[in-house]
Length: 157
Image (cartoon, rainbow, N blue to C red):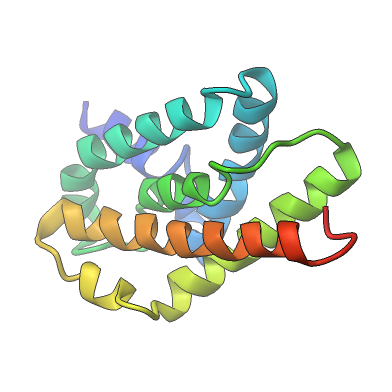
């Protein structure tokens, strides 16, 4: 079971890429996000968010035990945070969908890396909840910024 939790927690090995594992984990989550949103527009992303949160909480301890406290290899928390970014998005055109995915990805990585606006403080929550909470908050801030772009930047989406 430990190997399964490591495999899921590293998003099927994406977190084992030696450079920028959080970025790779976020990037490899994008196809799951897109297909969840397109195949089940009403609830697909909410289901994916629930799954990534549950997997994150389920897998954290084994990944911390193997890789250390808040390990970079553990990227299921990034998958959950990246999913939050798109909860309010409706995908409908391939060209604009790609732009929205790219913008949401970049916004999430910006907030996740810089940790402004209380994200750093939330990261200090105990154990697995702190590991997950900072990514969820980064995703929320990225969602707000993405929605502002979509609604107020002409021709964006």
